[in-house]
Length: 391
Image (cartoon, rainbow, N blue to C red; front, side, top):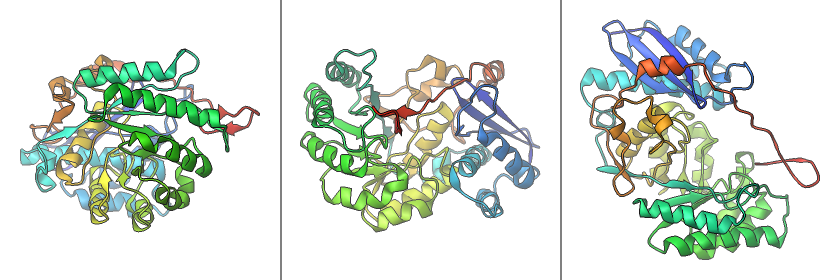
C-alpha cells in the first residue's frame, strides 16, 4: 500500500479537510488547522505547507509507517515547528492514522494501546461577555449555562472578561466576579465551571483576577497570559489554588516541557490539528502524565479534528475533558454521514467504534461547499487609548 494522491478542501466556516488516497482504494481523512485565516482571496498559510510536505515526503510512501513519515516531515525541515509547519503535519498525520486503522480493521485508539476509558466528557461554551448586544452579561451567561446543564452537560467554560488594560480597574475585576458568580449560582457546586482568560490578561491582571475568582472554585483557568509570557506562569500558579491550563498555542513537546518541569501547569491543552497530529499529541499527553498533569485537548474547529481528539482522549489515562464546538451544530454535521457519532449522552461522547478515525465524510458535500463563504476578518483589539491589545 502506498499513498497515490491527496486533496485539501477549504470549507465553511473556515476549516480544511485533507483526503489521502492509496493504490488499493483506501481513503484517509484529517483536518488541517487553517492558521492565519482566509482574508479576501488569499489562501491560508497551511495549504502551501501541506503541498510541500505531501510532495516531498508522503506521496508514494507506505502510509502505515506513521512515525517514520512524521519524523521525515518534521526533521527534514531546517526551520521547523511552529503553527504552520505543525498544523500541516497534523492534518497529514490524522489521515495516516485513519488509513492505518482502516487497514487494520480497528479504531485508532486500539492501535495506541487500547481504550483507557469508555467515553469522553465534553464541555459546552458559554458566551459571557459581549457588551454590544447583551444588556446583562452575568444574567445571560447564567441562563446559557443553566440550559447546558439541563441538556446533560456537567461542565461549561466561559471567558469572564472583555479586553483588558495592562493594569485595569477594580470595576473590571468586579464585573468578572459578577459573571462567574452568577454562573456558579446557576449551576451549583456539582457542575464544573472552567474559565478562559484567552491571554487577555497581563501577568499582573492574571494574578488579580485569579485571586478574585478563586472563591468560585473553577475547574481551571485557561491561558491566564499569552504563551510568549509563559515564564510568568510559575508565579501565577503559586498564588492561586485554581488549576492552571494552557497549550492551545504551543505546538510540540519541547514547548510544554519547561512548564511541566516548573510545575507551572496542571492541564495541558494541545490542539490535535495544531500540535503535530495524533502522534505528537499522544506524546505530549504521556509526558504530562509523568508530571501528574491532565490533558484537555483544544478543539474549536471541525468534526474531523474532534474525532481525532477523541482517539487521543480514549487512549490517554490523564485525559480530563474535551473541548468542542460542533455537537448539535447542523452546519458542522452536513459534512458527516454518521452524525450519530456526535450525539452525547449526559455530556459524554461514546468512543468511535468503526475502523480508523470512525467518521464517514460526505465527500460530495465537501466538494460542493469547498471554496465558498470562507472570509473571516479578525480585526485587532484596542484599548481605551487606541493602542492594540489582546482580544
